[in-house]
Image (cartoon, rainbow, N blue to C red):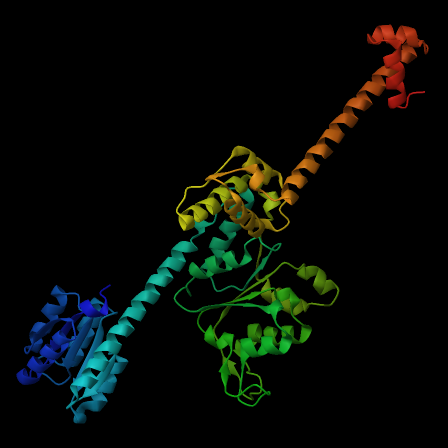
Length: 453
C-alpha cells in the first residue's frame, strides 16, 4: 500500500484552468499526480495505474463523473473518489456518495479545503487496507492448521469445529480452565461467514450483574446514577458479527433470562429503555463449569442451556493428550526465541518431566512454565533445573510411588515363594534355607520383614 506522501492521485476535469491549479496544489502536497481534461481518457488511465484517489468533476461530457466513479470502484473497491460539483448538482453528488464516493466538494472551493478532503480520503483508504490486512492476519493466525497438536483427541475436536464454523449455529465450548476455549472461539469466528464483521468478547464472571447488563445490552441516559449519556451495548457493537460470552456458567438466573430472550427473539432492550432493538449476532459461549449439574441443582436455566448447546464442544485437558506436549513446548520456545532473538532448545530430561506432569492448569500453565524456564536459563539450552520445585517434586513423588508399587509386587512374590518352600519342608527352616540358597539368619530376617510366622 502506498503511504500518504507517495499516494497516486488522478484528477479529471474538463475545465483546464482549474485542472492546472489542482494538479499543482496536489503535487506540492507531495503526492504523485496524473491529470486529464479529457474525461473519456480517465478509464484507460485507471486501467494503467493503481490510483489511491481519483478527484473528478461530476458534470462532464462525453463521460461524466458517475461513470468514472463506478469504473474506478470496479477496478479497486478501495480506491477513494472525491467528487467536485456545482451547487445545482448537489443531489447527484449525494447519489455518488451512495455509489461509493468518499465525499464531494462544491465549487468554488478554497484550496485549503480540497487539501483537507484529500488527506481525509487517503487516511480513510489506509484505514480500510489496514483493517483488511488485520482480518487476513487474524484468519491466518486462527487457521485450524495452526492449532498445535496431533493427538486424536484434539483432531476430533478440530474436525467438529471446522464443520460448525461455516454455519450460524450457537456454540457452547466447555473444558477445564486453560484448555484454550477463547482460542477455539476466535478460530470459529475467523473461519465463519461473519469473519469481516466484529468479534466482541466479554468475561461474564468478571463483573457484577448490573454492570454486565449495561455492558452487553447498553443503557439510556439517566437510567442509573452514572448513565450520563446513551451507550451502545456489546450486542449492538457486534451486530452482524460474533459475540463470545466467556464463563457463562457464573451468571445469575435473572441475567440468564435476559440472555434467553436475545437467543429467542434476536432483540435486546437497553437498560432504562422502553423499545426493543433487533440484533443479528452469533453467540459463542464458554464455561469450565458443569452446566448439566448446575441445571440439576437449579442454578442454571435448563431452557438457556439447550439454547446455548445447539453445538457443544468439549475441549480435552492436556493430561489426556500428553503426546502433544513436546509440540507445545517447541511452539512456546519458538515464540520466546523470536521475541528474544535467541534459539532456545529443550534438553530431553526437561521434555520428559513436563510430559509426565498432570497439568491442572492445562496449556496456559504450560506456557507460563516455559516462559519462566526461559527467563531462568543460563544458556539457550533449557534444562530440568530451570523448572520450579513444585513441578520437580511432583515428578519425584510419582517416581517414589512407582518404586513403592514395584517393591510391593516383589515382596508379595517373595513371601508366597517362601511360604511354599516352608510348606514343602513341613516348617523345617534349615532345610528351607538350603532350598532357597540363603543362610538361616537371612531367612529369619525375611520372614520377619514379610510377616511370616
